Length: 243
Image 1 (cartoon, rainbow, N blue to C red):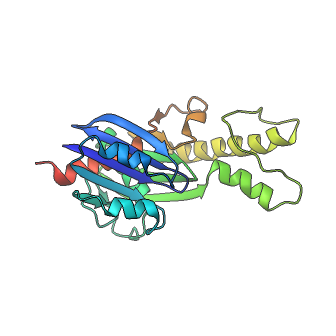
Image 2 (image 1 turned 135 degrees about the horizontal axis):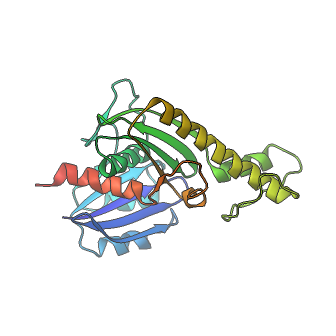
Image 3 (image 1 turned 180 degrees about the vertical axis):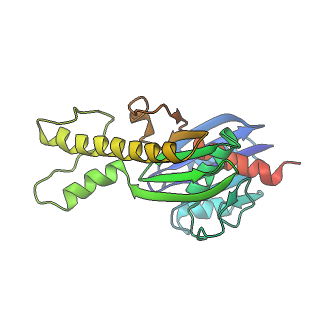
């Protein structure tokens, strides 16, 4: 089965085409562009899975609605390969569900902490019994920089380009970026230490657009997979449609 998975995020749209578990093609695109959707469909798609945190009704969603293929739109009501704890509200985001599915496929029967560094930073915990039990949401890297600009009089707005300033800086740009990236590093390490002291047999996975900047900078070794959500979407598709 040849699958198209679409991850519609707050900042961009990611497409990936899988065939028997192998990724044949993937790309990231502007939310207003439909060229990439047409390219993806040219592969001869059998099934489609969509994770969306965006507003239903825009042009891209309308284009997807017109695709005459078996399609799954991820939610807590979707048939999943793992269990969501009964007390988790049904508003749990599709992107978070997909990331946990990817983690479950990578590390079945292990405790897994998933950290997704996107527009927001999300923390998800999956038990070794295959149960999603809890998670948190925090402001993302660029969101923190933008907030400092918007909520002060003199601080400029900067865009993060992957640089890593010293822990204390000598100019405004490095001070703001350093404050954010070192703060996120410390935040993640606090979560990791807490879970390592309370859980055994645990894996930590980093994913998301800003994750590559933190690989190799954390005190604890972690796994990195920039396509965790896309792989999770494909896993959910196969779980639902495989014969």
